Amino acid sequence: MKLWLPFLSCSALVRFLALPPQRRAARLHPWIGALGIVGFGLAWHSRSASAQSCCSGASAVTPARLSLHENALLGLQERATYVLGSFDPQRRFASSPTGTSELGSQTDILAALRVVSRAQISALVPVVTTWRRASARSELGGGFGDINLAARYDFILAGQSVRVPGIGVLFGISLPSGTAVEKARRPLATDATGIGTWQGNVGIAAEQTFDRFYLGVNAIVGKRTARTVGEVTEQLGWQLTTLGALSYTFDNAAAVGASWAYTYEGRATLDGQEVTGSGREQFLLSALGLWPFSESWRAQGSVFMTPPVRYAGRNQPAPLGLTLALLRTWS
Image (cartoon, rainbow, N blue to C red):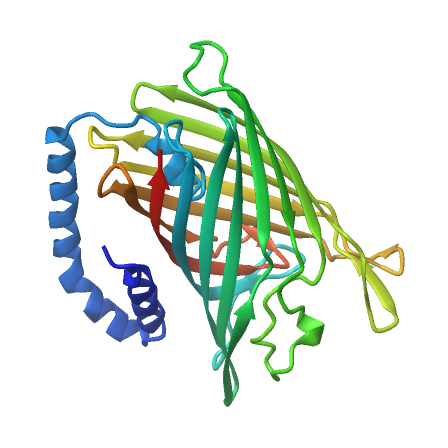
């Protein structure tokens, strides 16, 4: 398996989304039958394969998470997005104006390490690329994004008890290693790659397995530090993210699933005063998949979107996109 496969797939998506609607439909028709054949082959292969790890469901939801039998992980993930439009302060959706569009790509280096039997740490180093068009101007830019470090400790493992779900605590920190928007040098700010401040996260995870099914729910609270831009001190509001996921694991440890995420962010402040209408919200729906090539190699990915309907967001863009990751693990 080549490491450049995720890049080729996401680049193809970006080119496809840039086509006019009529050409998109024409290109989709030949692939519908092919996808059906692939899906049938996946189901058939999973029926005849020997039983493997039962923890694929959780790994499909979180790429950099170690399964119970794994001690280390290293991977590459590509994320491609197309902005459908945006939501206003009243949660009304509006498509991108004629003559404007935005495509994004993010390449992540993933790593995870088991510290003790129930504790693991992970890191994500992103490289962000953005193509943006406004009126007669188009622009491509990017650079290193904000590095994320995380830790997880499981007090109770999923499946350990029939009545009590698995319980874990989550910790994370985001470093301002990217370029903040006010420091961008390009006219359309395509070289802005970070939020320009530190962010700390703490959360709790509950999960359980039911034979081949995995069900998980997370709640994470985040807080960003204040920063000074010019003569103004600003700070983003508290952030609450809830996530739920359901997945099914086949005999060969392949997994499919779906997840939802809701993020709420309070009002921002300028010089200590709250800014009316500055709060943000967003729903994100995802379809997930994981395929093991061997005990040490697996590929996984997702298709995600924020529905372009009212109340699905506030003061946020509505993305459509996919992620593809190739991971190498050590037991």
